[in-house]
Length: 92
Image 1 (cartoon, rainbow, N blue to C red):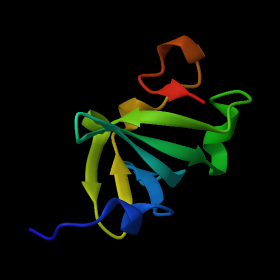
Image 2 (cartoon, rainbow, N blue to C red):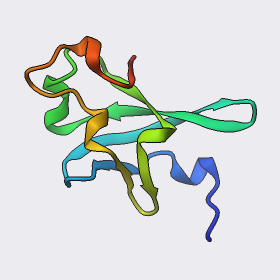
Image 3 (cartoon, one colour):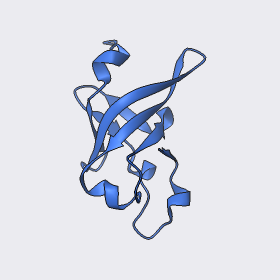
Image 4 (cartoon, rainbow, N blue to C red):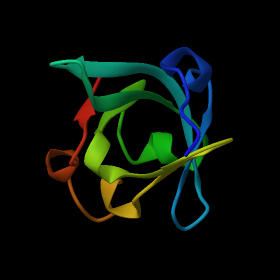
């Protein structure tokens, strides 16, 4: 297993598991020396789904893979017919 530094991951592009571009990693949120979530600067067509927010915080449990790109579960995104209140991540 190849271990990456958090600083190596910053700026990495984030995609959903269905291949949609989501944004870029801005920072990691740590809790008790473990990664708790990721702050993602939203880009692409996702910005219309989250209103005026510049980004979201996606909990680590929604991250599927970290390599040259980030893969997150599509369930981390709000559906177009749902409200923002139902987003698993926090808006920033």
